[in-house]
Amino acid sequence: MKAKAVVQMMTPKREEGTIASHMESVLRKLGEDTDREGLLRTPERSEKALKFLTSGYDVNLQDIVNGALFQVKHDEMVIVKDIEFYSLCEHHMLPFFGKVHVAYLPNEKVIGLSKIPRIVDAFARRLQVQERLTQDVAQAIGEITKPRGVGVIIEARHFCMMMRGVEKQESSTVTSAMLGAFRSQRATREEFLSLVRHNSLSR
Image 1 (tube, helix red, strand yellow):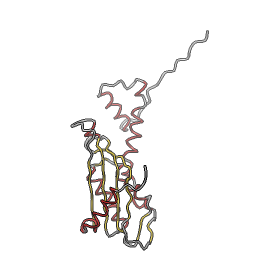
Image 2: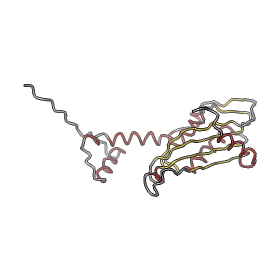
Image 3: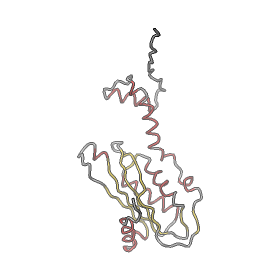
Image 4: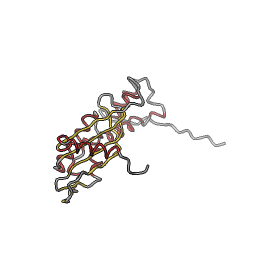
């Protein structure tokens, strides 16, 4: 009778000072057995996930735009709404997520539509607070397109309020940033808010 093969999981060797090596120490501090099968590769997976979730630090906005600014005779509002985003709260390093609505009034130039969600991701994939994320996106759109105005609204849910602390699962947070005509002209703000609220596409 043939002996059954025994597969032994080996603990990977980790370079000292890496995120993975520190994560192994964190798991041990939490009382976990880092040699058990389910956790053997967790430090490496955590490092990979954290690097992706904070990859926005390495993004260059000019590389994102890549020349996608076009001369167009269009002076009416352009809105890209319901942009999904995921970010990490810098206070607890727990996720917050939701939707971003971006509008701008062109000043002879428009930006490629796909660039706007990429700009959102560049700032969302960092340790953030929602208030600053809102301002970051608005200011970036303003600097890149040089428009007559920019409006940004973010609606989000925060795991730091849902999983811990007050534990309010149904609460949401709304922030806005209004620059240029969106700040100075009430009619422009109201048009933006009305168009954001209006769901014209079937789900």
